[in-house]
Image 1 (cartoon, helix red, strand yellow):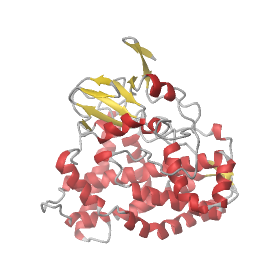
Image 2 (cartoon, rainbow, N blue to C red):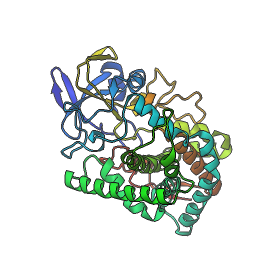
Image 3 (tube, helix red, strand yellow):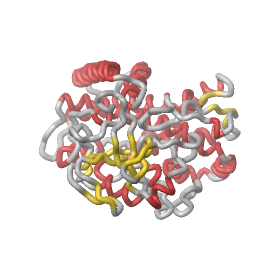
Image 4 (tube, rainbow, N blue to C red):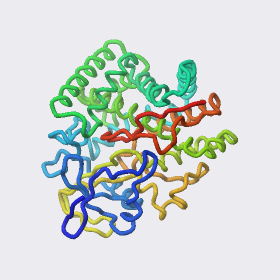
Length: 404
């Protein structure tokens, strides 16, 4: 920690006392320093937002963009370019182009379509639980269920072989880990990933099936425009990474939160109708979601009563916002029946998570299957001994040891 003028500069991400508990400094920042000075893993400075209203407003404000490859934007990660957030992409990041791209994809990610997938997701979860049980306990719920399930789902949606999941896991890690890899390794992984997706797009073009990429090959927007080859490849990459890493980590964290207090698990066993609201509350209550959402502003602006200079990179902490007492009564309590629950776990505005219906469907299906199959499920270590994954942009637990 150092000083910026008269103000402390906090090293970011902020330290959590344990893997499931929030940083102790969040309430103080929300109260006294809603726009705080932070130092990112790269060493560059940025401003941190922790209040619900500020985070929601900035994520919804088109002036705050994702143009993090601007010359004066802060680099996020430790490699020379700053990592995944700072790399340019062929996908439109703002304006009408971005709206058209989202519309083309959102036709696929409807709640109705995701609900239709649910029986298959539950059946796959049952198979994974069978394998975990056959292996005996203690077992790592992350390795047994958390990671294989979302990879299987996203591979099915994109029509790519599940047998390649170890390669996806490595490419995803090079994208999302802010401290582990150097520029040379991340660039090599990026080239491999692009080549892989280019070959897959060509294979889909030659033999279209009933999957998302096959549909995107011929999909048109309102003006009759189609995605370019570059955009198809980048879309496939984005969905493979976003579609498995975040949900996989959330499955483990959700289980950790619900099993950390036995009363929570018992309440769900007694009333399965709470599964939907319990998933939403786990998303809100998650104190280990990773970095948050960076935004860049090219003009001077005001946030939370503070003037933000032009060229500032702003880090929106959705997790801190989700613990704001002004937005959620009893914000530091996990209330499984909380309703309404307007949490910001999926962001807000034009860049809110496209796959949130899919993530909700997967989380609800996993929780339903675990409650049905393993009512005696419990953590095999004290909750305070669960360990965070360090350096990962999306946050997570290294393992979730369980018994039943």
